[in-house]
Image 1 (cartoon, rainbow, N blue to C red):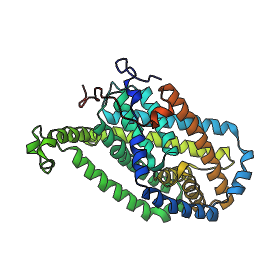
Image 2 (image 1 turned 90 degrees about the vertical axis):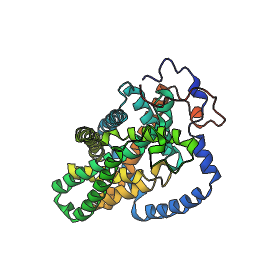
Image 3 (image 1 turned 60 degrees about the vertical axis):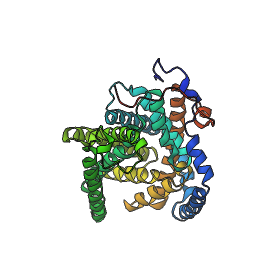
Length: 362
């Protein structure tokens, strides 16, 4: 896996990546004060709603062949997500291999570090390794990917309702979610079509800034909107949506295979519901490793689908253990491939003053 272009050398190594976020969290201990009671409540709900001990007792009956197939498919899903990320960035010269490595490393960091600080890796590492504009990375990672994930989830949920008739009772919630996602999508599409004048004085958006900051504000706003370029026309929207659906369908396959691994015959609609429940809950920075929220969400979804609570607990506990082990292994391998050591991610100190990433794509 390629780690950097020949011109970068080793200058990026001395820069701390996650230390600004960790320092901010350390200075604002109220964030932990907020998270601690939330984690305590989730732990109580976990003990109440999930039969963890019984789930662990059933794990020896796992079928390793299905586990391996599921994890290979999981990695394939992340590779498709990395390809989609490259499409969103509109930088055709950005190699797919390091983007995949960064994607896998960020998954590991998100599991280990509070408040999804691992997402910062997907902004900082491409900026330093591939010289991509940070503002463009921010909009593509935090906004564009999120809205396309939402659109893909809506379509998959509608498919699940069609495939699994008993889920028709959840149709009002699905429709509400769909309307919300579509409204946000339309608003972002309108924003993506806006342009920032070359002359900052001509931009009402930037007029409130002090004059000395307007040039930089115009540049960063231009980059930010450029990161949303996939939302500008129907052809690009359709292409990005197709890739998004394929990526998430691969992950549906993962949850179906994990069901087989633990002795459960899931159908396609059930696997869709379990996959979406799991991914929606882990997107919230509630607990380290998402221990508790994942088990609760997957168990309740499994029971909603008509399953037994003990079986649901077995599936939730077992699938989470497998995914955590694989995320750890694949993330560690990705960091090795990128020649990125944990100390380089968390190191404190002031970065050297070298040339910043380019402002505009070549």
